[in-house]
Image (cartoon, rainbow over all chains, first blue to last red; front, side, top):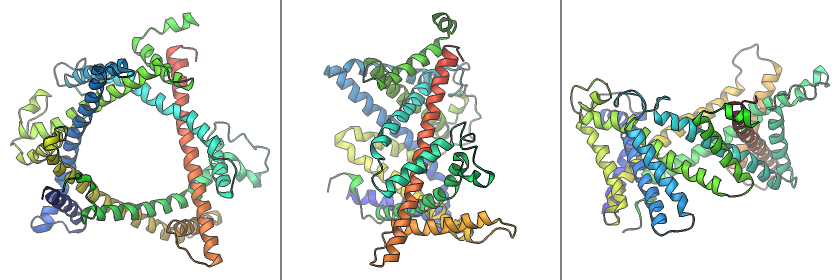
Length: 232
Length: 227
């Protein structure tokens, strides 16, 4: 019963959004309901997202506290997670370090939260992602061996893009005559970005959109209810 | 070198430099410095996004409409009347929190239903409009020149994009026949896709390299003051 009711909520919400996109603007009737639903739902969604953050954070902290209690492997690092979470939460909710009281902007660079962002979160985020440069290069070395025409094309196009983005790319192959300038890595990489890449990405977008539409319809029509758990 | 480093005595710069080096230390192997930085990142980012969500979303969109005087706390003008409709997402949010309690976890299904319903509805409309119809429109537009003064290379590129898109779609949609010509088109489509994936991979690598250069520049310039 509960699962059926949840399915009704899902279908009604989705259908109201779909209807609001296709029905003409009107104050009353179904069109009016759909339009007001369309104006309310994004705000409701963002409010629920904050509660989802709370749920996620409570799960994260719960698992780390359990790790500390049970003295599991590397439990000392869980203290770092829990204490940094608590400090940032207090500093942020109390808007410490910024304008007096709670009147300042939460992301004000002068506040403690802003300074935590610029000195802890931003460097960690950028460095963690920059590490991927090394791992992508090593993964490419292992995967893109020239075994077939397809992998060769992949390797060559990736190499042209990488070389074409180098600051001195325009200087490479500068000995080529004027008529063959299009072979220079900077020109060739730009052409590859604008022409074959456009065609490939367009085909991917069209196919992905068909897939997303099919999956959305599957959920709206109640053909998949896995997300409501296993209870009958 | 030490002299240069001590010149930069700003605590925040030193902290950022320590964390940058701690993460880079993973290139050698997993070690306590990396684990510290990793766990710090998880704790700080979870709390940071929660705080941002509270002050930029929950406070103005849920707390102020329910308690107008709350706007005065942040120096804003309070709304004239309460908006009780906003209780619906607040109740849905609280029902989602019941997922923590196994006995009442099923109450959170209504919130899940709302989230999936909203996502499905908006995805259906957005993908249908901006990806499916817009991209098909772009294919059609590419064969109709915008002006008479279009150059030969633009025409050639447009025809190439059209044929390449059709062949890639042909491969993607798995149109299987025994005709040799159809297999040739499908294979051409695969090559177009491989080129596009190569371009995406190359761009992703260069994006990461840009971040790497930025971090190295920070270390040598802001921290050490060498550059």
